[in-house]
Length: 223
Image (tube, rainbow, N blue to C red; front, side, top):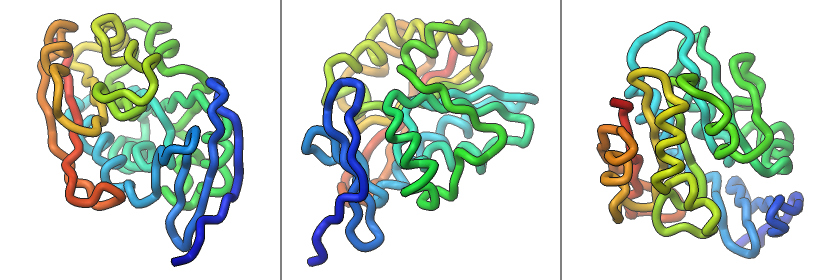
């Protein structure tokens, strides 16, 4: 089997070492020695935007916030689904991820960062959510493994009661909050309900590294 080739390395803000690797046509980002994301997982990543944007009410000039750029697949799907007058913002904490999406892996998702509707918020998506009220029509999160289990404890603030209430405040009337999750286990539906959302879960068949496993998109509609 062909060995992995390291294309680039960088340090994340939490000092974890990031590696961008390639083997044949597959690209892989590792963090702290663990596989973080693969180009084979594009269907699962795109499903976040398909479910989230698909739940939006028809209106002019929708504003969508995507938390976590990854390899650009969720952003690319949002660009394909949304109208020309949409505003799409992607929040990414790690500068190297943005740099790689503009260069080394830009073609994987079709260069969505070049779309004129897209702007990048370089920072923590939690901070961006807390900055606004009644602003976004959709918040799409692909951070960590989703609500449970978390790889990094500090991401719990996104999926706890306070984080969900902040998301609720940041959304406009009839806004939607979509969250990619490794599984549909846990009590996230109850948490969404406590924060003022009508909750549902959408299974996503994975055809990438976890072939045969079903991931999930949690969807909360603002009441």
